[in-house]
Amino acid sequence: MHHESAAGPPAAGGRQRCRTRRAAGTAALTVLLGLCGAVVLGLVHQQTGSDGFLVGLGLAVLPVPVLLAAFRWLDRAAPTPRRNLLFAFGWGACAATLVAITVNGFATDWLASSLLPRAPDRADVLGTTVVAPVVEEAAKAGAVLLLYLHRPRDFGGVVSGVVTAGVTATGFAFTENILYLGRAFGEDLAFGHFGLESTTLGTFLQRVVVAPLAHPLFTALVGLGFGAAALAARHRRALRTLLPLLGLAAAVTLHGVWNGAATRPTRVFFTVYGLFMVPVLLVVAALALWARRHVLRTVRATLPRYAEAGWLTPSEPYALGCLRSRALARDLARRGGGRRAARAVAEYHRAATCLALLRARAERGAVPPGFRAHERDLLRILRRHRPLASAATASAAPAAALPTQARIEEWERLRAC
Image (cartoon, rainbow, N blue to C red):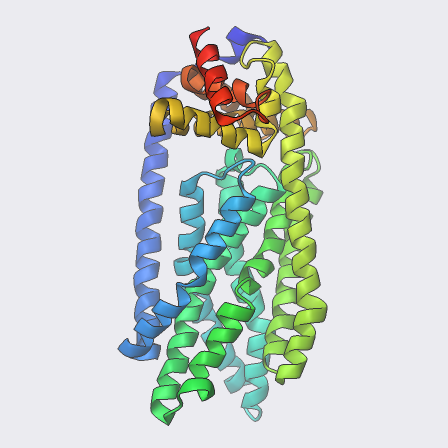
Protein backbone atom coordinates (compact mmCIF):
# COMPACT_ATOMS: atom_id res chain seq x y z
CA MET A 1 0.00 0.00 0.00
CA HIS A 2 1.79 3.10 -1.25
CA HIS A 3 0.95 6.61 -0.24
CA GLU A 4 0.83 8.08 -3.74
CA SER A 5 -0.94 5.30 -5.58
CA ALA A 6 -3.68 4.96 -2.99
CA ALA A 7 -4.48 8.66 -3.26
CA GLY A 8 -4.68 8.90 -7.01
CA PRO A 9 -7.92 10.74 -7.87
CA PRO A 10 -10.45 9.20 -10.21
CA ALA A 11 -11.41 11.01 -13.41
CA ALA A 12 -13.22 14.29 -12.78
CA GLY A 13 -15.78 13.56 -15.48
CA GLY A 14 -16.65 10.23 -13.89
CA ARG A 15 -17.12 11.82 -10.50
CA GLN A 16 -19.38 14.50 -11.99
CA ARG A 17 -21.55 11.93 -13.78
CA CYS A 18 -21.79 9.90 -10.59
CA ARG A 19 -22.87 12.95 -8.59
CA THR A 20 -25.47 13.85 -11.24
CA ARG A 21 -26.97 10.36 -11.24
CA ARG A 22 -26.99 10.29 -7.45
CA ALA A 23 -28.72 13.68 -7.24
CA ALA A 24 -31.35 12.62 -9.78
CA GLY A 25 -31.97 9.36 -7.94
CA THR A 26 -32.24 11.15 -4.60
CA ALA A 27 -34.73 13.65 -6.01
CA ALA A 28 -36.88 10.90 -7.56
CA LEU A 29 -36.85 8.86 -4.36
CA THR A 30 -37.76 11.89 -2.26
CA VAL A 31 -40.74 12.65 -4.51
CA LEU A 32 -41.87 9.01 -4.39
CA LEU A 33 -41.67 8.83 -0.60
CA GLY A 34 -43.46 12.16 -0.33
CA LEU A 35 -46.32 10.89 -2.49
CA CYS A 36 -46.52 7.69 -0.41
CA GLY A 37 -46.58 9.79 2.75
CA ALA A 38 -49.40 11.99 1.44
CA VAL A 39 -51.49 8.95 0.52
CA VAL A 40 -50.84 7.29 3.88
CA LEU A 41 -51.78 10.41 5.81
CA GLY A 42 -55.00 10.64 3.81
CA LEU A 43 -55.87 7.01 4.53
CA VAL A 44 -55.08 7.34 8.23
CA HIS A 45 -57.08 10.57 8.50
CA GLN A 46 -59.99 8.89 6.75
CA GLN A 47 -60.03 6.05 9.29
CA THR A 48 -59.45 8.15 12.42
CA GLY A 49 -61.10 11.50 11.77
CA SER A 50 -59.48 14.86 12.52
CA ASP A 51 -59.60 14.58 16.31
CA GLY A 52 -58.35 11.00 16.35
CA PHE A 53 -55.59 11.84 13.89
CA LEU A 54 -54.27 14.71 16.01
CA VAL A 55 -54.43 12.70 19.25
CA GLY A 56 -52.80 9.69 17.58
CA LEU A 57 -50.05 11.86 16.11
CA GLY A 58 -49.32 13.52 19.44
CA LEU A 59 -49.07 10.20 21.29
CA ALA A 60 -47.28 8.25 18.53
CA VAL A 61 -44.43 10.73 18.28
CA LEU A 62 -43.42 10.29 21.94
CA PRO A 63 -41.21 7.16 21.62
CA VAL A 64 -39.66 8.18 18.29
CA PRO A 65 -36.86 10.47 19.62
CA VAL A 66 -35.94 7.91 22.28
CA LEU A 67 -35.71 5.05 19.78
CA LEU A 68 -33.75 7.08 17.24
CA ALA A 69 -31.34 8.22 19.96
CA ALA A 70 -30.83 4.60 21.03
CA PHE A 71 -29.96 3.51 17.51
CA ARG A 72 -27.64 6.47 17.00
CA TRP A 73 -25.90 5.54 20.27
CA LEU A 74 -25.45 1.97 19.03
CA ASP A 75 -24.11 3.35 15.75
CA ARG A 76 -21.38 5.52 17.31
CA ALA A 77 -18.46 3.31 16.33
CA ALA A 78 -19.10 3.59 12.57
CA PRO A 79 -21.92 6.13 12.11
CA THR A 80 -24.33 5.49 9.26
CA PRO A 81 -24.74 8.56 7.02
CA ARG A 82 -27.74 10.64 7.98
CA ARG A 83 -29.13 10.53 4.45
CA ASN A 84 -29.39 6.74 4.77
CA LEU A 85 -31.16 6.98 8.10
CA LEU A 86 -33.56 9.62 6.75
CA PHE A 87 -34.33 7.34 3.82
CA ALA A 88 -34.85 4.36 6.14
CA PHE A 89 -37.23 6.28 8.41
CA GLY A 90 -39.12 7.73 5.46
CA TRP A 91 -39.42 4.34 3.82
CA GLY A 92 -40.81 2.81 7.01
CA ALA A 93 -43.20 5.67 7.76
CA CYS A 94 -44.46 6.12 4.19
CA ALA A 95 -43.76 3.40 1.62
CA ALA A 96 -43.80 0.32 3.89
CA THR A 97 -46.89 1.54 5.74
CA LEU A 98 -48.74 2.19 2.51
CA VAL A 99 -47.92 -1.32 1.27
CA ALA A 100 -49.03 -2.81 4.59
CA ILE A 101 -52.33 -0.93 4.75
CA THR A 102 -53.19 -1.76 1.13
CA VAL A 103 -52.08 -5.39 0.96
CA ASN A 104 -53.24 -6.39 4.46
CA GLY A 105 -56.72 -5.04 3.83
CA PHE A 106 -56.98 -6.69 0.41
CA ALA A 107 -55.67 -10.04 1.67
CA THR A 108 -57.98 -10.14 4.70
CA ASP A 109 -61.02 -9.27 2.57
CA TRP A 110 -60.05 -11.98 0.08
CA LEU A 111 -59.71 -14.57 2.85
CA ALA A 112 -63.10 -13.62 4.28
CA SER A 113 -64.92 -13.63 0.92
CA SER A 114 -63.24 -16.51 -0.92
CA LEU A 115 -61.63 -19.03 1.43
CA LEU A 116 -63.50 -18.55 4.69
CA PRO A 117 -66.88 -16.97 3.85
CA ARG A 118 -68.56 -18.73 6.76
CA ALA A 119 -65.87 -17.89 9.32
CA PRO A 120 -65.00 -14.19 9.08
CA ASP A 121 -63.47 -14.24 12.56
CA ARG A 122 -61.02 -16.91 11.45
CA ALA A 123 -60.12 -14.81 8.42
CA ASP A 124 -59.29 -11.90 10.72
CA VAL A 125 -57.08 -14.14 12.88
CA LEU A 126 -55.23 -15.45 9.82
CA GLY A 127 -54.84 -11.93 8.53
CA THR A 128 -53.35 -10.79 11.84
CA THR A 129 -51.05 -13.73 12.57
CA VAL A 130 -50.02 -14.88 9.08
CA VAL A 131 -50.65 -12.27 6.39
CA ALA A 132 -49.70 -9.12 8.29
CA PRO A 133 -46.29 -10.37 9.53
CA VAL A 134 -45.26 -11.49 6.03
CA VAL A 135 -46.43 -8.31 4.31
CA GLU A 136 -45.11 -5.87 6.91
CA GLU A 137 -41.70 -7.45 7.39
CA ALA A 138 -41.19 -7.79 3.63
CA ALA A 139 -42.19 -4.15 3.15
CA LYS A 140 -39.82 -2.92 5.87
CA ALA A 141 -37.03 -5.15 4.57
CA GLY A 142 -37.23 -3.24 1.29
CA ALA A 143 -35.33 -0.30 2.79
CA VAL A 144 -32.55 -2.55 4.09
CA LEU A 145 -32.32 -4.35 0.75
CA LEU A 146 -32.08 -1.12 -1.24
CA LEU A 147 -29.30 0.27 0.95
CA TYR A 148 -27.51 -3.09 0.93
CA LEU A 149 -27.54 -3.16 -2.88
CA HIS A 150 -27.11 0.53 -3.74
CA ARG A 151 -25.08 1.85 -0.79
CA PRO A 152 -22.64 -1.02 -0.13
CA ARG A 153 -20.01 1.50 0.96
CA ASP A 154 -22.17 2.45 3.94
CA PHE A 155 -23.29 -1.09 4.79
CA GLY A 156 -20.33 -2.36 6.74
CA GLY A 157 -21.72 -5.19 8.86
CA VAL A 158 -24.07 -6.28 11.61
CA VAL A 159 -24.34 -2.92 13.36
CA SER A 160 -25.18 -1.18 10.08
CA GLY A 161 -27.86 -3.75 9.39
CA VAL A 162 -29.45 -3.55 12.83
CA VAL A 163 -29.43 0.26 12.89
CA THR A 164 -30.86 0.61 9.39
CA ALA A 165 -33.56 -1.97 10.08
CA GLY A 166 -34.37 -0.45 13.48
CA VAL A 167 -34.76 3.06 12.10
CA THR A 168 -36.97 1.75 9.28
CA ALA A 169 -39.18 -0.08 11.77
CA THR A 170 -39.33 3.00 14.01
CA GLY A 171 -40.79 4.96 11.11
CA PHE A 172 -43.26 2.16 10.38
CA ALA A 173 -44.36 1.91 14.01
CA PHE A 174 -44.78 5.69 14.18
CA THR A 175 -47.35 5.76 11.37
CA GLU A 176 -49.03 2.57 12.54
CA ASN A 177 -49.36 3.97 16.05
CA ILE A 178 -51.09 7.08 14.70
CA LEU A 179 -53.66 4.78 13.10
CA TYR A 180 -54.23 2.54 16.13
CA LEU A 181 -54.26 5.34 18.69
CA GLY A 182 -56.48 7.50 16.50
CA ARG A 183 -58.97 4.66 16.08
CA ALA A 184 -58.96 4.00 19.82
CA PHE A 185 -59.67 7.65 20.55
CA GLY A 186 -62.55 7.61 18.06
CA GLU A 187 -64.04 4.56 19.81
CA ASP A 188 -63.74 6.25 23.19
CA LEU A 189 -65.55 9.31 21.88
CA ALA A 190 -68.30 7.16 20.37
CA PHE A 191 -68.90 5.03 23.48
CA GLY A 192 -68.10 7.59 26.15
CA HIS A 193 -65.09 5.77 27.61
CA PHE A 194 -62.70 7.96 29.57
CA GLY A 195 -59.91 7.60 32.13
CA LEU A 196 -58.70 4.15 33.08
CA GLU A 197 -61.45 2.48 31.05
CA SER A 198 -60.51 4.16 27.79
CA THR A 199 -59.30 2.15 24.82
CA THR A 200 -56.83 4.92 24.07
CA LEU A 201 -55.04 4.41 27.37
CA GLY A 202 -54.84 0.65 26.90
CA THR A 203 -53.52 1.02 23.35
CA PHE A 204 -50.99 3.61 24.46
CA LEU A 205 -49.71 1.40 27.28
CA GLN A 206 -49.40 -1.65 25.04
CA ARG A 207 -47.83 -0.03 21.96
CA VAL A 208 -45.85 2.90 23.38
CA VAL A 209 -45.00 2.03 27.00
CA VAL A 210 -44.77 -1.78 27.19
CA ALA A 211 -43.55 -2.63 23.71
CA PRO A 212 -42.13 0.36 21.79
CA LEU A 213 -39.34 -1.92 20.54
CA ALA A 214 -41.66 -4.54 19.04
CA HIS A 215 -41.39 -3.51 15.38
CA PRO A 216 -37.70 -2.52 15.65
CA LEU A 217 -36.95 -5.92 17.21
CA PHE A 218 -38.72 -7.83 14.43
CA THR A 219 -36.96 -5.97 11.65
CA ALA A 220 -33.59 -6.01 13.45
CA LEU A 221 -33.52 -9.73 12.67
CA VAL A 222 -33.66 -8.82 8.97
CA GLY A 223 -30.84 -6.35 9.58
CA LEU A 224 -28.77 -9.06 11.23
CA GLY A 225 -29.15 -11.23 8.16
CA PHE A 226 -28.12 -8.49 5.74
CA GLY A 227 -25.26 -7.39 8.01
CA ALA A 228 -23.88 -10.93 8.16
CA ALA A 229 -24.25 -11.25 4.39
CA ALA A 230 -22.22 -8.05 3.88
CA LEU A 231 -19.34 -9.63 5.80
CA ALA A 232 -19.42 -12.94 3.93
CA ALA A 233 -16.89 -13.61 1.17
CA ARG A 234 -18.20 -12.55 -2.23
CA HIS A 235 -17.70 -15.97 -3.81
CA ARG A 236 -20.12 -17.47 -1.27
CA ARG A 237 -23.19 -16.31 -3.15
CA ALA A 238 -25.53 -18.93 -1.73
CA LEU A 239 -24.67 -17.88 1.82
CA ARG A 240 -25.04 -14.19 0.99
CA THR A 241 -28.53 -14.92 -0.32
CA LEU A 242 -29.55 -17.33 2.44
CA LEU A 243 -28.63 -15.11 5.41
CA PRO A 244 -31.07 -12.26 4.61
CA LEU A 245 -33.82 -14.80 3.88
CA LEU A 246 -33.22 -16.46 7.25
CA GLY A 247 -33.37 -13.06 8.93
CA LEU A 248 -36.66 -12.30 7.18
CA ALA A 249 -38.10 -15.68 8.16
CA ALA A 250 -37.12 -15.10 11.80
CA ALA A 251 -38.68 -11.62 11.73
CA VAL A 252 -41.94 -12.96 10.27
CA THR A 253 -42.08 -15.76 12.84
CA LEU A 254 -41.46 -13.43 15.79
CA HIS A 255 -43.98 -10.93 14.44
CA GLY A 256 -46.59 -13.66 14.04
CA VAL A 257 -46.07 -14.90 17.60
CA TRP A 258 -46.38 -11.34 18.89
CA ASN A 259 -49.58 -10.63 16.97
CA GLY A 260 -51.06 -13.94 18.10
CA ALA A 261 -50.27 -13.17 21.73
CA ALA A 262 -51.79 -9.69 21.39
CA THR A 263 -55.15 -11.27 20.47
CA ARG A 264 -55.14 -13.51 23.54
CA PRO A 265 -56.02 -12.66 27.16
CA THR A 266 -53.68 -10.33 29.04
CA ARG A 267 -52.14 -13.17 31.03
CA VAL A 268 -51.12 -15.01 27.84
CA PHE A 269 -49.77 -11.82 26.31
CA PHE A 270 -47.46 -11.08 29.24
CA THR A 271 -46.35 -14.71 29.43
CA VAL A 272 -45.23 -14.61 25.79
CA TYR A 273 -43.72 -11.18 26.36
CA GLY A 274 -41.64 -12.32 29.33
CA LEU A 275 -40.64 -15.81 28.20
CA PHE A 276 -40.17 -15.19 24.49
CA MET A 277 -39.90 -11.55 23.45
CA VAL A 278 -37.61 -10.30 26.21
CA PRO A 279 -34.99 -13.08 25.72
CA VAL A 280 -34.93 -12.44 21.97
CA LEU A 281 -34.50 -8.72 22.61
CA LEU A 282 -31.60 -9.39 24.99
CA VAL A 283 -29.90 -11.72 22.50
CA VAL A 284 -30.22 -9.20 19.64
CA ALA A 285 -28.95 -6.38 21.86
CA ALA A 286 -25.99 -8.49 23.00
CA LEU A 287 -25.12 -9.37 19.40
CA ALA A 288 -25.30 -5.73 18.34
CA LEU A 289 -23.08 -4.58 21.22
CA TRP A 290 -20.60 -7.38 20.51
CA ALA A 291 -20.53 -6.31 16.85
CA ARG A 292 -19.84 -2.70 17.88
CA ARG A 293 -16.92 -3.81 20.05
CA HIS A 294 -15.67 -5.88 17.12
CA VAL A 295 -15.71 -2.76 14.94
CA LEU A 296 -13.46 -0.96 17.44
CA ARG A 297 -11.11 -3.94 17.62
CA THR A 298 -10.93 -4.00 13.82
CA VAL A 299 -10.06 -0.30 13.79
CA ARG A 300 -7.22 -0.82 16.27
CA ALA A 301 -5.90 -3.83 14.34
CA THR A 302 -6.15 -2.43 10.81
CA LEU A 303 -5.32 1.28 10.93
CA PRO A 304 -1.67 0.86 12.03
CA ARG A 305 -0.94 -0.20 8.42
CA TYR A 306 -2.16 3.19 7.21
CA ALA A 307 -0.10 4.83 9.94
CA GLU A 308 2.98 3.03 8.61
CA ALA A 309 2.19 4.44 5.16
CA GLY A 310 2.04 7.97 6.58
CA TRP A 311 -1.69 8.61 6.52
CA LEU A 312 -2.03 8.63 10.32
CA THR A 313 0.28 9.27 13.26
CA PRO A 314 1.28 6.15 15.23
CA SER A 315 -1.00 6.96 18.19
CA GLU A 316 -4.16 7.72 16.19
CA PRO A 317 -5.28 4.11 15.56
CA TYR A 318 -5.52 3.56 19.30
CA ALA A 319 -7.55 6.74 19.81
CA LEU A 320 -9.84 5.81 16.91
CA GLY A 321 -10.44 2.38 18.42
CA CYS A 322 -11.82 3.86 21.65
CA LEU A 323 -15.13 5.75 21.81
CA ARG A 324 -14.01 7.66 24.88
CA SER A 325 -10.87 8.88 23.14
CA ARG A 326 -12.91 9.95 20.14
CA ALA A 327 -15.16 12.01 22.39
CA LEU A 328 -12.08 13.59 23.99
CA ALA A 329 -10.71 14.47 20.56
CA ARG A 330 -13.95 16.18 19.55
CA ASP A 331 -13.98 18.05 22.84
CA LEU A 332 -10.42 19.25 22.30
CA ALA A 333 -11.21 20.37 18.78
CA ARG A 334 -14.34 22.21 19.89
CA ARG A 335 -12.47 24.04 22.64
CA GLY A 336 -9.62 25.00 20.35
CA GLY A 337 -11.35 25.58 17.02
CA GLY A 338 -15.09 25.73 17.57
CA ARG A 339 -17.82 23.69 15.90
CA ARG A 340 -16.07 23.63 12.54
CA ALA A 341 -13.10 21.85 14.05
CA ALA A 342 -15.34 19.42 15.94
CA ARG A 343 -17.20 18.55 12.71
CA ALA A 344 -13.89 18.03 10.94
CA VAL A 345 -12.80 15.62 13.68
CA ALA A 346 -16.08 13.70 13.44
CA GLU A 347 -15.72 13.35 9.65
CA TYR A 348 -12.09 12.35 10.06
CA HIS A 349 -13.03 9.64 12.58
CA ARG A 350 -15.83 8.29 10.40
CA ALA A 351 -13.58 8.13 7.33
CA ALA A 352 -10.83 6.36 9.26
CA THR A 353 -13.29 3.85 10.70
CA CYS A 354 -14.80 3.13 7.27
CA LEU A 355 -11.29 2.73 5.90
CA ALA A 356 -10.44 0.12 8.53
CA LEU A 357 -13.68 -1.82 7.95
CA LEU A 358 -13.22 -1.64 4.18
CA ARG A 359 -9.68 -3.03 4.37
CA ALA A 360 -10.74 -5.76 6.83
CA ARG A 361 -13.59 -6.88 4.54
CA ALA A 362 -11.24 -7.01 1.57
CA GLU A 363 -8.76 -9.15 3.50
CA ARG A 364 -11.55 -11.59 4.40
CA GLY A 365 -12.50 -11.94 0.73
CA ALA A 366 -15.66 -9.82 1.04
CA VAL A 367 -14.35 -7.06 -1.24
CA PRO A 368 -17.20 -4.57 -1.85
CA PRO A 369 -17.73 -3.14 -5.35
CA GLY A 370 -15.46 -0.23 -6.20
CA PHE A 371 -13.01 -1.04 -3.42
CA ARG A 372 -10.08 0.98 -4.79
CA ALA A 373 -12.20 4.03 -5.60
CA HIS A 374 -13.78 3.92 -2.16
CA GLU A 375 -10.41 3.63 -0.48
CA ARG A 376 -9.15 6.65 -2.44
CA ASP A 377 -12.21 8.67 -1.45
CA LEU A 378 -11.73 7.88 2.23
CA LEU A 379 -8.03 8.71 2.11
CA ARG A 380 -8.91 12.00 0.41
CA ILE A 381 -11.26 12.82 3.30
CA LEU A 382 -8.50 12.03 5.81
CA ARG A 383 -6.11 14.32 3.98
CA ARG A 384 -8.66 17.15 3.77
CA HIS A 385 -9.50 17.12 7.49
CA ARG A 386 -6.07 16.20 8.80
CA PRO A 387 -4.92 19.77 9.59
CA LEU A 388 -7.80 20.23 12.04
CA ALA A 389 -8.36 16.66 13.22
CA SER A 390 -5.09 14.79 13.43
CA ALA A 391 -3.56 16.67 16.36
CA ALA A 392 -6.73 16.41 18.46
CA THR A 393 -7.06 12.70 17.71
CA ALA A 394 -3.40 11.95 18.45
CA SER A 395 -3.47 13.83 21.74
CA ALA A 396 -6.61 12.00 22.88
CA ALA A 397 -4.92 8.60 22.82
CA PRO A 398 -2.08 9.05 25.31
CA ALA A 399 -3.81 11.78 27.30
CA ALA A 400 -7.15 10.11 27.96
CA ALA A 401 -6.61 10.15 31.70
CA LEU A 402 -5.16 13.66 31.93
CA PRO A 403 -7.14 16.68 33.16
CA THR A 404 -8.82 18.77 30.49
CA GLN A 405 -6.28 21.62 30.66
CA ALA A 406 -3.38 19.22 30.18
CA ARG A 407 -5.08 17.71 27.14
CA ILE A 408 -5.60 21.17 25.65
CA GLU A 409 -1.93 22.03 26.18
CA GLU A 410 -0.89 18.75 24.55
CA TRP A 411 -3.13 19.45 21.57
CA GLU A 412 -1.74 22.96 21.14
CA ARG A 413 1.78 21.53 21.25
CA LEU A 414 0.94 18.99 18.55
CA ARG A 415 -0.70 21.62 16.36
CA ALA A 416 2.41 23.75 16.57
CA CYS A 417 4.60 20.91 15.28
